[in-house]
Length: 153
Image 1 (cartoon, one colour):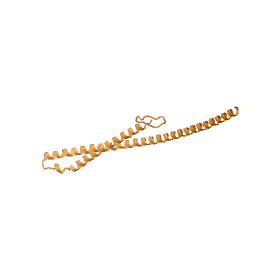
Image 2 (spheres, rainbow, N blue to C red):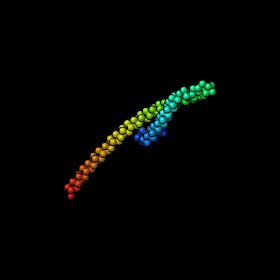
Image 3 (cartoon, rainbow, N blue to C red):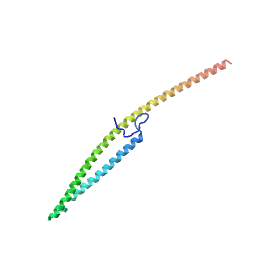
Image 4 (cartoon, rainbow, N blue to C red):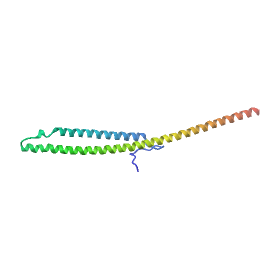
């Protein structure tokens, strides 16, 4: 069973346009926030890489111990950033997959609505033709009754 994300159905099939547009807007917003977070993390990684260990080099042992602290912090930051980047990629793939499903559903729904509209149009044309024919028949009867009543007078 397919998950419709709370879209309301329409009478003739398909989904409520507002619901679909709201969902697309939500996905776009999520994608933008993830892209911003990804960019911030990439900047932080670059900052840490540029920071370099030269600033922390020293001849004394206590300062050498302090040198390891920034390296550990840098490694932790890189690991965390890599995890966030990986998660962002997974989320973006999921958003793209959902977008494609939604796009296909909208395409099918649009084709269905077009087909239904064509059917309705054909039925209206048939009704209009039937009414025109009936009107012509009524006019012909009226003329025939009028000519009989004049000739019978």
